[in-house]
Picture (tube, rainbow, N blue to C red):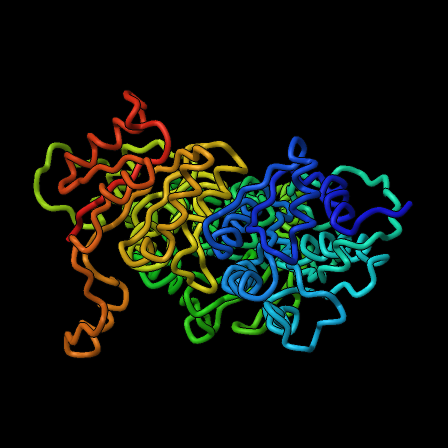
Amino acid sequence: MKIRGADIVVEILKEKNVGTVFGYPGGTVAALYDALYKKRGEIRHIRTAHEQGAAHAADGYARMTGKASVCISTSGPGATNLVTGIATAFMDSTPVVFITGNVPLLQIGTDSFQEVDITGITIPITKYNVMVKDGNELAGELRKAFTIAEEGRKGPVLVDIPKDILEGQWEFEKEQLPKRSSGKNACEARSIDETVIQNTVRLIENAKRPLILAGGGVRISDASKELLKFAELTGGLVSCTMMALGEFPSSHKQYVGNAGMYAGDALKKAVEESDVVIAVGTRFSNKTEFTEKLLKGKTMIHIDRDRAEINKNVPATEYIVGDAGNVLNALNRRLEKDTHKVSAETLKWQEEAHNGSERHFTGKNGSNSKMTMEEAVKTVAKTGGFDTVVTDVGLHQTMTAAFYGFEKHGSFITSGGLGTMGFGMGAAIGAYEATGGRILLITGDGSFGMEMQELATLKRYGIPLTIMIMNNGALGMVKSIQRSRFGRRYSETVIRKDEVSYSKLAKAFGLTAAKATSVKQLEEILEKAKNNTNDDCKGAFIIDCRVK
């Protein structure tokens, strides 16, 4: 049968069990928004204040569900406003299907109003992109987009659809497809070479001081349970990169701290003393600070679903290409079959590391002194009771990663690979839409300036985020560089703490704000928000957190 191209798009969304999409309407996608309006009871659309916010919201939604999400924009500036969000998703391997409109086919290449070559622009930051030039191929290209976004190493794809393709009539046949995966090891369980498994297990069983480095691939594969079992079977000490925080309990006796620039002495000592390093789902970016020089002379086992990451930054003694959950399952089964027992030497090393590692904040009550950012993070960790913490990028991000103490899968979302300021609000919106849980956004006064327009989105849809603005009057990360390397010449990194009245801003959007200048005040505000004791705490709640 023949139906309108815009209706084909909506039919594919229904076919893929997409219940929520994010976006912003425009002229070239008006027909698509008409089709969405007709199916508004089946597909919820979240209109953000800016297309970049929609891209980050779709990203946050996909990170929480493990499935490909959808973001829609119009042509020209609507499409280019997505670029930072697309690149963010690409760097962090997040599956998002971006659908953009474009000018009619006959106007392509004429520099017509709001025409842009968005497929050309996004070639380096998408797994696949295409302009649909034949409406009869529209359904096939959209189905292909979902498959590519979710298979192998996940990531964003883009389908660009000219206006006349959306408005024209085209052949369409429904496909009876099985329901999409829940996201648990969504990559098919390809057969893993048994010889490689045996070789890997032999290396592990001979290890006296094994160290496990968990990366974002563990989160993407929802493999935290498999990782915990693997750690306990091997006796290995565990460290997580920023993208894997929460995938291994930070309070576990085998956890020796986060990898990266704020690595503690316990982790540094563990790296130095380890004889076998097992890296799971990490690409050894420069942020992990696990370098070839540091790991020289150690047995290196690398597990990753992307073959291109093997031997790229750190050479591997043995490697396995595959989904982190599938591979860890296979290793766990083999270790159990071999009745592997953790050696006395390993247990002793484990105990020494546990005794030497820094334990998490126990709390500081009643202090009226000025807060440091570290104290603010530790206070909200102790008091807040949030399901998921989202951060922007900057000093507040590194402090949250270092001092919050994440315990479970899906409890932390941040922009890792690209380091995108302005990511947090959209991602927090997406996380809430995916889970309905208690979401905390920790942001900085700099990052918040790039996303404050999305307060309108919070108000429009009644999204009850708690937003904690680390108001230190600075672009803190860059200012620290200027302090250490450029003679304290603070060029454009100072922000007056009264530059924005967050209470007035919140009031303008019909929201509530409170100011905390001490640990005691922050504790009281967080308790009020947690218990929802009055009408002020219903809906989004902004905390102007004054820190040194």
